[in-house]
Image 1 (cartoon, rainbow, N blue to C red):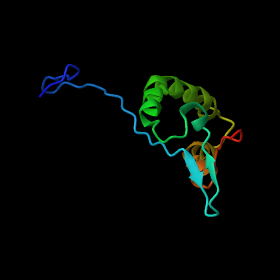
Image 2: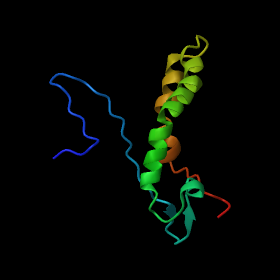
Image 3: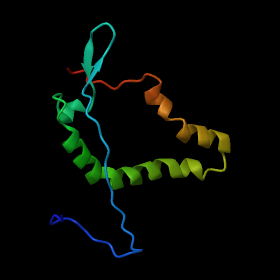
Image 4: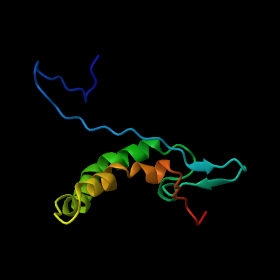
Length: 109
């Protein structure tokens, strides 16, 4: 059954539908038992109920974030002074900053 916001596309038609996948894990817990709030909790709270607001913020902000990332990356990607391996490592290996054990916590907590 259809809701008021449903859209029906004609066969072969295309439509871009942005979506946000978020999770709200407000506290970092260590083996020692110590827990620290993640930085985003300063704005979204620590109750573990912020996923809808995080998703709304992402959907409201993603175009701006995309522009900011392009503004940051383009001068480096188009620089003839930097080797290609460096450009690739610089942007494709950034995941290690978070996966490598870095945490951004709210130190005012």
